[in-house]
Image (cartoon, rainbow, N blue to C red):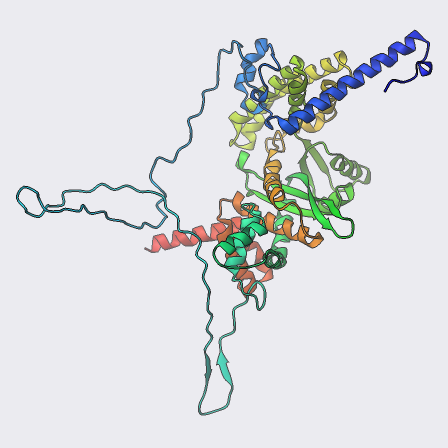
Length: 528
């Protein structure tokens, strides 16, 4: 719809400024439109291979080496570039060796139909055999546990009846064993099977159980496990370095006709990249909001390094700490988030300047890939010798970009974001224990997103809290290389029966539980 020419100014200089401003705004809007189109219809990977060569032809020039040597920078060679070194295609992983020895063996002997010699009619002698193994599966077996408690009384006196007490269950008077409840919980929060699908699977086996009943079992399990969840969160927050992130988790909001978007915060630790003492763990917290108040309620007493993305609530909490002289808090930001912004610019505009920035970040990640698994001291030495120079070069690139491009352009915004978070992005240069990005917690967010995609929402605030408790414990067990169903069934049994009192709940945390079982297994082997 055209506007009236009478409303336009007559000053040529003012008209020129208006046209330039509109052109800049339209260019910015086109970038957003292209990025939205890619988000909806395009590949989700940041790798440059996701770009169609016919759409964007990039002359990498002397960046071709960088683009091929930095696997973490999401940067492949453009067609036709002269890259002296190319990454070798990794061979497909196949389990061609022997199957695990801990699995039970079921032998099946196939005899020939005729064991008589066709020439002399004498019996054939066995001279050898061929053995092959194949992995088999026995479908889940549903059974009914009948608990019989005999009663005893004395015929000579009337001192009463003697009977063993009934074992505790997840739900008093319920029809589900602890193992079944653990199976339902792990199937949803570990393997992302929503309850309605589990109800359908049970119906296929002839067991008609409503998904509401399954939800009641999960909620009751969360009630039992809440103290253990609190111990897990306390352990995570007592560490000197914690990763934090958040993701939306809708819940039903009766009366509004729609869901309310709440948040599930994730706090994670993992010292394995530098062989530190802390085991991997993740704890989720359900909140109604996403503000600084909710964050303070969780991490108000935390002291140390908090590695996060650029969300404002983290920066607000750090500012409050500085002003009130409270417990010290240092923010370390995520280089992957900064890289992602330049990857979006390349995908939407084909900017060679943005690709050059990605190439520099690729070299930083190449250093990180070489030092992963080394001690904190060795990592710090390599970073000071190599990464510090690369980060200085990256800063110079960004400052030159800011001087040459509009601050309102997509590449200008990406450069401004990176420079605005520079102090936190360079935190890894003076501490070998700090990671270059927050991918550890982002990987812990993915299971929640998969479960949310299938289950859609939590049924209530209490359901969201149960979600946080169960997802925390199940995913922490997975991080520690434990069968989460086996662990959860044993932990629930110990808590419900009182075998493990409240003051010894720390022994049920996944890494402690695993160490105890391995020690018992080792003792049994020595005894044998």
